Amino acid sequence: MERKEAIEKLRKLIGKELHELAEEYGVTIYRNGKVNKGWAGHVFERYLELPINSAQSPNFGSWELKSIPLRYKRDGTLTFKETMAITMIDPINVIQKEFEESHLLSKLKKIVVVARIVGKDVKEPSYIHSVVEFNLEGEIYDAVKADYDLVRNTIRENGFDYLTGKMGYYIQPRTKGAGHGSNTRAFYARPRFLKLFIKI
Image (cartoon, rainbow, N blue to C red; front, side, top):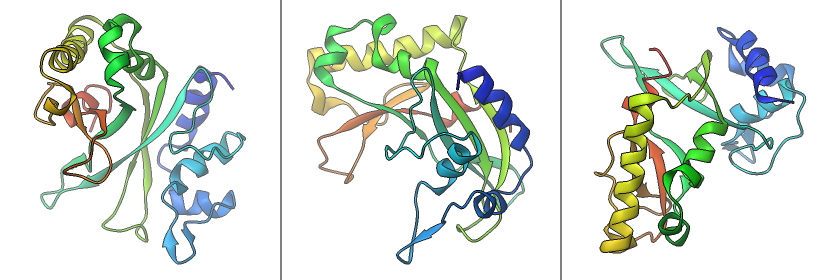
């Protein structure tokens, strides 16, 4: 299934409740007494009649599916529950590649995002809010390129360990894994980047 077709089909789910869809498509929310972490993505894959992908971020060749949770704050405003992981940072690859050939740009061009409103826990209803793609143009493209170049120059001049989550205006390099002391980093989209495309 091509990306455009997938987006059009996924948009038909806007406003629907995810638990009901999970039941309809035979996706288990709990497994061995624990929450099946990828259950939301599995619902979308079943709906699109695609094989369940064991990878955390289902990849369909020309596009990639991501699910982002939104939540209501106490004052009733809708906000992003968390940042969105885009791709791991391979320091050698980043040093070798300009932004135009980077894994980061390639991933951003592929991603299809399903934003869903969630409750305080997995038992509460979850409604599909929107389906978007990232179109990087003009100032947004330049700003993301600047974030990438900052990461690239930091690795080149100071070393991989000098990357911190404080860097980057739209895209930050952050520890992925066991928190402090972890030697892996990934590119994450900050909420201010997500807000450009997901209107909340």
